Length: 185
Image 1 (cartoon, helix red, strand yellow):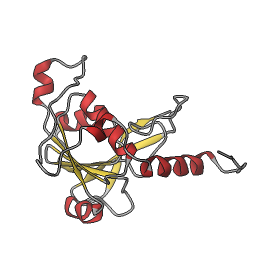
Image 2 (image 1 turned 120 degrees about the vertical axis):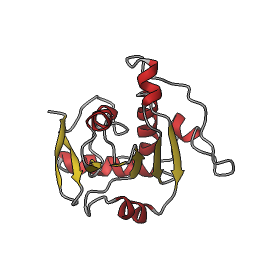
Image 3 (image 1 turned 135 degrees about the vertical axis):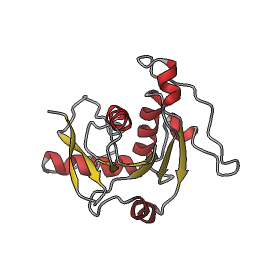
C-alpha cells in the first residue's frame, strides 16, 4: 500500500478517519451477532458489565439500533452497549433519515446510527454511562445526540487512546439541544 503525504487539521483527519471506519465492513462481534433478518431474533447475551449488579443489568431497557449494514463503527458501539449490560437488537437499514425524523433528531445533529432506548432516542456514539444517567434521571426530553463521529467516543476509539473533546447534547421536547455531558477534556 502506498501512502501520500497530506496536510489536514486534526478535526478534518478525525472526520476522514471516522467516515472510513463507518464505511469499513463490520467485523466486530456485534456484526456477527446482529439480528438475523430471517428470524428477527437477537443473539443470547454473552457479555455483561462486571461493575453492575445483575438486578441493575436486567432493569435496563432493550436497545433497538438502526444502522447501515456496512458500518463497522456502529457495530463497535453495539459492542460497547452490550458490555455495559444492555440487551441490543440491531435493525440494519440504509434508510436512517425517516427514522431520525420520526424520533425527533434535530436537523444537523445526526450521526451514523440511531437507537431507541426506554422511550428516548439516542443518536450517535453516546457513551453508555450517559445513557444510564438519562434513564435514571428520566428528564422530559426526546433523548441524547452526539453529532458526527468524534474520535475516542465509544466505537470510534483511536489506536493511541486519544479522545477528542466532545459534548453529548440533550434534546428537549421542542427540539432544542443543551449540553448534557462533556468528554475528552
